[in-house]
Length: 135
Image 1: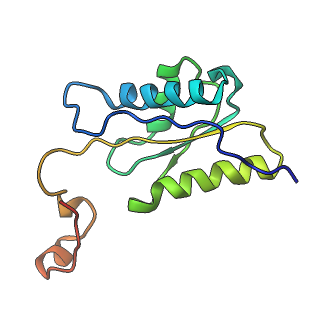
Image 2 (image 1 turned 30 degrees about the vertical axis):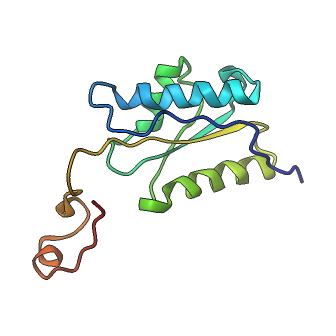
């Protein structure tokens, strides 16, 4: 069984970036990771996109910006654990022999202040104080 390895990493500068679309944020980090790994985007056989608050098909939207829409790139949600869940999916794809090179990336854009609890919790949970949201 092949062993998966992390061969490249990339990251956009941490911040809110109000004038930058989320697809551009992700594409910038992906390009940096590809350069670090010494591979081309066309070498990627499978993608996994970690996100929570962005719209559905975020991964597909990022793949389109990168110039290739033919590979699968499902969104992986897991709140604060979404990144590791996405990475784990990529590892499983490589170690199962289904692909040689997989891409795991995450992207998020959240406005100023508290994350709105009503996105994650029912009204009754908010009214009773049964929610926990990060600032």
